[in-house]
Image 1: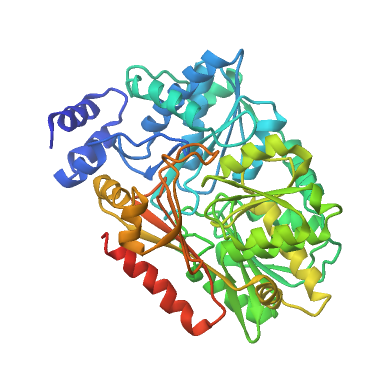
Image 2: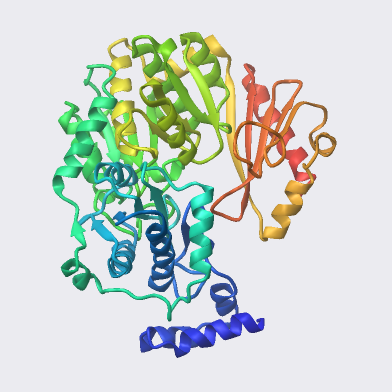
Length: 542
């Protein structure tokens, strides 16, 4: 271990802030564990903090949360007069503890702070930030990561995640703050006597009312639904919005209903993955359900399985986006006056659907914060926003993806098509028949170091280099250099003569490189062949 790491370990052992039990935990850590936990700081960016829980500068713990909150407080006090912040949290282990720690620091810094008294999802936090006219919001969550993770997201006054400029300034303040000596705080009970308030129940019901109004596209409700919140924060809001809107045949997966940060039935509670639906499938077959709906722990994503003959088919985030684009545009008056927004990596097929209805389409960088930014510009002309990782939003009430309203949307969409004698799988196949069978797949490649990720991207840093890997290309865009009208980003976009689109980018939250593959192919026998050809080309870099 280098001197910096050794000094940091000794600093934690000697701190009067840590308990004796915590110091003993550090003493019992192996050299390898110490190196991993103390050799770096948990990185703060536009996605905030995210990491494995535990002691150390590179782990999610109360001390790291307090330090980040002190940096945020300095930023807010510099830019706003009498700033206000609202805090929410999901069902993950220690989420409430971290939320209360943040509230203690903010209140000590003289910032008016509101906090929810129960778990609430991302879209409710986004809405509440706007409703209470706060200057920032904090959401304690690690989204759909495994149980050992937690995180800390920061939202701006518009209800969207902060953008690069604000994140960079907050990071600068965090790095200038000593994790122990520079952080003063109240304990939570004391903070409540010093002006910290619990959010009123009326705000939650206001959210439901606004979300309902934004998502009411058809009146049909005769659909049988199995719903699972995957032991997360969707339990109350999703059940309430469906009940209030006349969906009276909703069955819940009991083992996954109660909030539980250990996620005992699905180690990785990600509604994009087939394995989280095992229990839901059993119940769906018993109840003869039309669809299965799942939301992740912070309920900003929705997953969907649809009845397909004797079984059920898991729809990808892109396929749900295709269905919703067609459904919403087809139910709107004057769709030609509207604009939908999708990330650049989301399926190109929605362009064809939007064009068919006269709907304009705007592409953004990866991250729903950029879609939220466009909502502020488009206002009432915003129709629908989505990204391929199962995130969707309609309306003006929030600025982040919303699993609550998306759950309602897919239920009423299924009910609408059921009256026409169609399943969602049949509707999807009809759309493929009309607009072409677009195959979209995201492939995540685990990389064991930041340097290797840089090397991989360097191998695609010019059109000539990209052609050495993938063969002749008809379109090459380097989002870090080319003038695309979007902020600079570490992402390469390649299109080949046969219509294949490959977008390569490092993950913003994990040590991975992601490949977003899209191509049109009617012959099912060639699907695997074409995908494998792309991956084989990419493997030349690895």
